Image (cartoon, rainbow, N blue to C red; front, top):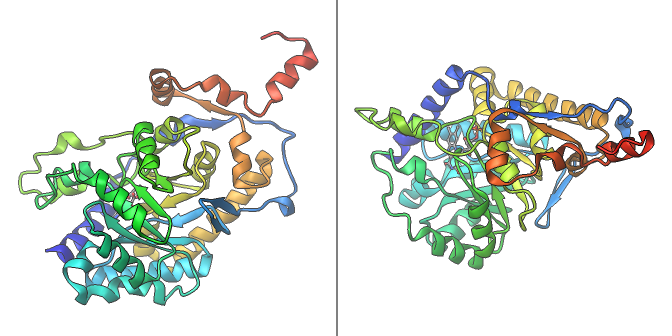
Length: 363
Ligand code: FNR
């Protein structure tokens, strides 16, 4: 059953990728253009540091799969691409492994193909502390992701219906394991309140994983005979909205969910993400064109991210958080309702104030 579900997820996620309109709320985030802000490309670094972790590039292949023969082969290819490009990689949920240890190799391949890379194990919020440790040990994982996914479980025919134990369980795992714990959504987004709760539970990093790309309510609804949960499609906050909501929280945040190109990566970094995760888009490239296509895509994205930083005057990904940003459309209404100051974002580089001083403007 579990292995079949993993194959279903890949199939339905790819149907979704092909049907997606292409628009999401990252389109409502624009950089103010400063024509003299540019740097020399040789002065730009892509390295990022958070929660004691340093990655050479601020991009990672986010949690997807493992647990069946087909998804084991996908994990092998994803791990090869991660090794070739130097990006971090996460496994899919290892719950299947706890139920059936004979599928261990479909996860272990992530480490076997990528012995020196940064690998994250992934469990759900009902995992016991012992199982969380088993997952870390199997992958010799550098970090542990715990996914929280009430919107996915609800329409899932065989899904969990009891969520109250998740908070104490996350706290217990975070206190017990020896690697940093990252809690992530799966495409419906983490609100500011949720991130603050996670911080209080001892979680080191939050991966906001918002709406805009893979929609698990739609995937699980597609697995129901009557498809009677269509009203949950599109539930939650977009990744851009989550990043705005989480401004200045006390723990580092990562962004994933609906990231389509290097500009989305730059937008997410400028909104405060320390790194940016991609699932559906990379999986589509892999399944359409194999490992060479995915390696080429990731390499191009990294090259073009460096080009954007050069143009925008950001020596490092963290410097992008000083770029002026304009927030449009529904995202702007979200900011108004959540008390997020869009004027501050539009003027944070200081250049507007400096210009007004030079021109005597009092605006
Ligand atoms: C996922 N995702 C996911 N997340 C997780 O924490 N554990 C998991 O097992 C899975 N499984 C999974 C399978 C497939 C096929 C996809 C496409 C995705 C969710 C993923 O990590 C991410 O949060 C969302 O997919 C949003 O990112 P994208 O796909 O819009 O880039």
